[in-house]
Amino acid sequence: MDLHKLSLNQQLEGLKKGEFTSTELTSHYISRITEFDEQINSFITVTEDMALSQAKAADERYKNKTNLPLDGLPIAHKDIFCTKGVLTTCGSKMLSNFEAPYSSTVYEKLDKEGMVMLGKTNMDEFAMGSSNETSYFGPVKNPWNTEYVPGGSSGGSASCVSAELAPIATATDTGGSIRQPASLCGLTGIKPTYGRVSRYGMIAFASSLDQAGVVARSAEDAALILEAMSGHDPKDSTSLKLDKPNLSKELKSSIKGMKIGLPKEFFEKEMPSYIEQSIEEAIEVYKSLGAEVVEVSLSNINLSLPIYYIIAPAECSANLSRYDGVRYGYRCENPIDIEDLFMRTREEGFGAEVKRRILIGTYALSAGYYDAYYLKAQKCRQLVANDFSEAFKSVDVILSPTTPGTSFKSGEKTSDPIEMYLQDIFTIPANLAGLPGLSIPCGEHQGLPLGMQLVGNSLEESKLLQFAYSYQSNTDWHKKMPNI
Amino acid sequence: MALSDKELKEIAYLARINVNEESLSSLKKELEDILDLFDELNEADTSEVEAMSHPLDLSQPTRKDEVTEENLREELLKNAPSVKSGLFLVPKVIDGEN
Image (tube, rainbow over all chains, first blue to last red):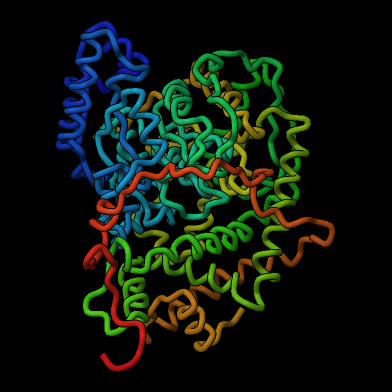
């Protein structure tokens, strides 16, 4: 049986009925990783022994009828989530030898529900990048065509799920790092409302923007796992004091009579005709399902990119000051004094993109420039958030393309940082406003998948997933998988 | 937005990142291009807007003053590049005779 072709709920059902064991399911994925990952480099660490012992424990629980809600289901974790006793690198030389002394809340929650960790996925260094080419552990390839990038920063998570080396993977999104790779790899990716999922033990990039979510093969799979990851965590002071949402239960509710907003500022941009066509077709599907489509205006949305590239680097320059070669992580050889230790450790331990962002952030926060850059950006951020609040008075979700195009060739945009930054032009606004956003496959062009984005009002990830589910119940784009 | 070599070196020192002379000019160009992006914000009228520091309306949560952290001293020290007698070792920071 092709176990990797089953949905998560089907796998769970099979485990419950004893049609196969978690050991069989886990071994199946491990052997796929062994066979195919060489082509795509989606894992930094494969935790085979640990996975098999977790699977064995799950099988025992099924035998004793003490099984947990997600018992024995495999998952891959982005290497940004601390996992106790397991290498946790964040894609950086700086943490290339770091074994986390404790686990992230995301890992703990899924572990407590019985999930089996297959390994840690590759990513752009410290989650900074949109092509997964900045990883110290080498670039990740897109399983649809290995000459192309999988997107980033959660490129390893997207690539391994797309190649069916894991049924689902955790990911994080600061400016599009879940939705953009989901779009480029033909997957369903969701970033929930800021504060929905605990950031404890998730290595920080830009703390007011970072949020964890999943990349999955369907809205149904995503709902199942995102629900289990959500909920208040006293260890994260920005975690919302709310119970976890009933995402799976509410998934199949009808979207009839709901309103979709199309932001005119996005559609005024020049975009490739294949994107326009796919989006138009998706809109027709929604209309046929009884949704109403109206135009909305987000008049400050075009400020999002510059706002983001001030705020994210500013926060990153503060967060990454902890990597100093003293307490953990990389240290340069033979430092002559403490200053030399700091300066060379950070020169050698960080890659080019991370250093660029630290320098930009340091500049934006430095004396004399704070008001002109950081404070101005925060004010503009409020304008963008206000635009969304206004729009959500009249619509349920906002629809747009996820990315300005399908995937691009490896190396094509590495020499021009700005060109790379433009990848996230449609995804960044949701992070600025702290809103939930999702990408689902809605077409393809020259053999590469293409996604559409839905952004919802605060705490309305359930509605987003309903929109995704009803689309996926009436179309087949999400069922297409690459041949590897 | 033009950056001088001196400014770039100052920022790099503030960030404690060594920048070698050969990469100075290409790095300067990249940073200038990024800084140019920010000019767009000048067009936005923000005279009536409060700065948004965070997407959530947060109040600082408090808890009872009780020890909740486990003592992970040994595990934490295992990750350190250099340790002696339970302490992190760094090059000498105070000048003077030994």
